[in-house]
Length: 73
Image (cartoon, rainbow, N blue to C red; front, side, top):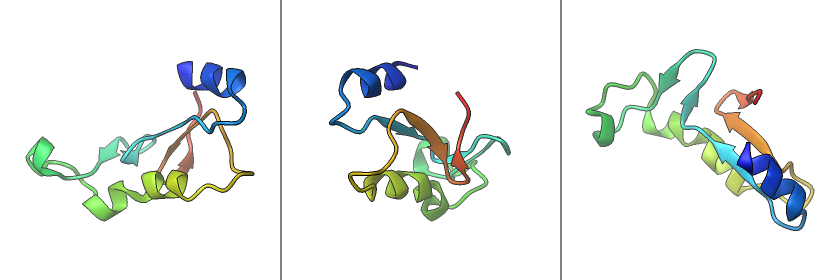
């Protein structure tokens, strides 16, 4: 939860975490790093990362997301 603490301490900077998978479904992207054992494509795995990269100034901070949306801490 260090992300939440950073977000509280530095409100002018966005601090969020993304995982390249689906937490609820326990799935992850197939990549060279995991010998292509994942269930998701690389494109699906980048969904959450791209979402955070596209945040505007009014976007959330202190969050954890996967490709399906926010994940509870």
